[in-house]
Image (tube, rainbow, N blue to C red):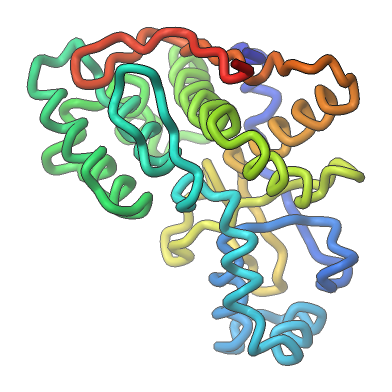
Length: 281
């Protein structure tokens, strides 16, 4: 399953800086998503980068199309449903990820909370529902509670081993959701992955949607000079998935190890345990 060890997560958890030498569509060296944030900031005069600003000026009529294409990488993107035998369908990978956050050991009310998430008609809605601290946080797994409370303002160089274990659980939960997205939509999502920097193994970068309080754990902040800075763990996982998928394609084995998906830990959805699924079949 290529799940990450604590040591591998430690090696991944560093702030990265991504910059655009030339923001030209066919010469990109960085492949960002949630790019509407970058485009909007450029239109508002908040970016001091002539390459980006010039691109936005010349492509005004196409920006929404480019944003839509890039956003197919997001967990919230529509069109990549996840089907698990004997369980409800998940409209997006975000629906599944938010359900995983909830700890089945915290009582039968978890089923009701998971159904609320599953019933959301969009990935954004599922994220908003799962992230609600007033009535959801008490049901989160301890890793998410620790990240939100004890680790909120703690720099990584002060993490203790328990903190790294928590981060590793969160990272592997997202990795599982991405594997399930690929497993259920190999041709469609596989094509999206390969279109985003596969040849040169270029970085995929998540731009945080909220630049007032940017999430630099999963994504990045847009700097005034147009550079993107953050740990970008979601982008790094997508890059990793793309590269492993491309490697398996080149090996031409006829089946894919990536498509045999086993949960990284015990996961219950509406009271039932999710088992290993082989999406090669």
